[in-house]
Image 1 (tube, rainbow, N blue to C red):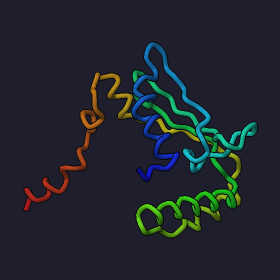
Image 2 (cartoon, rainbow, N blue to C red; image 1 turned 120 degrees about the vertical axis):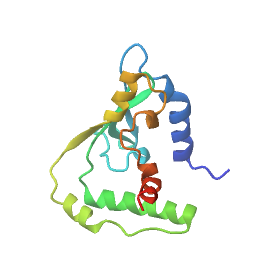
Image 3 (cartoon, helix red, strand yellow; image 1 turned 45 degrees about the vertical axis):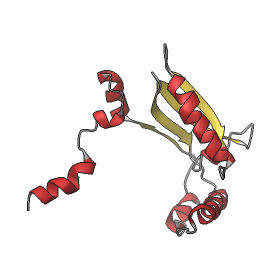
Length: 149
């Protein structure tokens, strides 16, 4: 088995933890390991965990939020580690986003949250899978285009 710690952590979270969160009341899972929060800044009290949280209801992740990492040197270091892992696993890498890294040098402290509208619709309709609520099926685009010729 060639799984990394991050692979195992992700598998446990996805398979064992997330499906059981948010029943009876909304649940927030917070302070992820820094390795699981590539763009998030570390917490002030522990550099091993990041200012990241996810909001769950009925076993569904509704929102993902974090304090933005605005330290360009630290972000470059993390990207370098990510590229080394891609090289190890896939035998290839891609160029670092130098414009993004340059922008971080002047970016003020910030945070953000992404709320999944499709996930809210899942909960409202009782859908068991997200593909049941996708309003514009992108996988069928190619097949639809062939029928119009």
